[in-house]
Amino acid sequence: MIRWLAALCLLAMGAPVQADEMRPVAIQFEQVDEGEWRLGWRQPIASAADDRMAMPQIPANCRIEGKVERQMAPLAAHGAADVTCTGEVAGQTIGWPAFPGHGEAILRVSPLGRALQVHRLTPETPFATIAERPSAAQVWRSYFVIGVEHILAGWDHLLFVIALVLLVARPWPVVKAATAFTIAHSITLAAVTLGFSGIRQDVVEALIALSIVFLAVEIARGRRDTLTRRLPWLVAFAFGLLHGFGFAGALREIGLPEGEVPAALVSFNLGVEAGQLLVVAAVLALLRLVDRLRPRARPRLVRLSAYGVGIMGSYWLIDRLFG
Image (tube, rainbow, N blue to C red):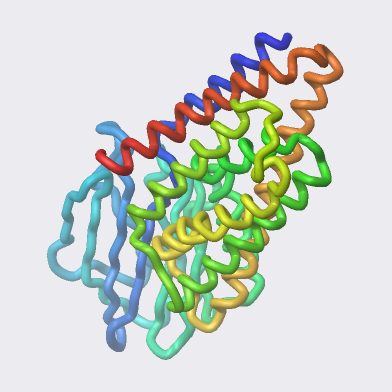
C-alpha cells in the first residue's frame, strides 16, 4: 500500500509539464459606437489537434462585417473582427462553442457607458446571457471559482503548498503557515492590480520555481534545526509575497470588471484560499493514512515526495531561465 501511495505521489508530481497552467480562452466583446462592436479572442493552443479556426458565437442580432483577422503566436491563436448589431445586445447570448481541449473561457462584455461584465464559460455552460447591468453576485461567484481553479490548476503554486504541508506536517502550524502565505500573496496581488508595484513576469516565474526548490531541499534535509522549520509561517509569508506577483499575472490575463474591482480581488483571494485549504486537508489526510498503515514509512515517503517536488521545481527553474 505504501509503495502505491509513493508511486501516486510521484505520478502526480511528474504529470504537469507547464506550470501555472491557467490559460483560458479569452473573449472580448467591446462596443465602439452605436451598433458597432469589436470582437477579439485568444485561444490557447496545446496540441496540433486544437481547432485553430474556432471563433466565438456572437449574439443573434449581430453580424460580422468584413474579414475576420487571424494571427498565430507562441502557444495561442488570436482573432478579431468588426461586428454590427441591430438593437440591444442585453438579453442576447454569446459564447465559445468549440470547447474540446479547453477547460474554460473568460468572456468580457464592455458596452459603451456601462460597466464591464465578466462571464466564465465552461463545456457545461458554453454560452452566457449578456446582462443589462452586471450583478455583484455574478462577479463574486465568477472570481471565486477562478481563484479555486487557479490554485488547483496552477501546478507551481500547488506544489509550493504541498511542499509546505510536507515540511510542517502538523495541522495547526500548517494552518498558520498557509494563512501567512495567503495574507502575503493578497498584499502583493492587490498592490500590482491597483498599480502600486510590479515585477517582470519572467523574473517572478523563475523565483516561484526557486521557492519550490528551496522547500524541497529543506524537506530532504530531514529534521535539522533551520529557520524554515522553526518559523515556517515567516518563510511562507516571504514566499507568499512573491507568489502574489504570479497571481497578479493571471488576473492581468483575465481582466477585472470596472466598478467591481474590490469584489473581484476579494472573491479571487477567497477562492485561492479555499483551494489551498482543500490541498492542505488532502495532504494531511494522506499523511494520517500513512501513519495508520505504516508509521515508519512516513519519513521515506516524505523524502521521496521531496525529490519529486525538487525535480519538477528545478525543471521549471531551468526552463524559465534558459528556455
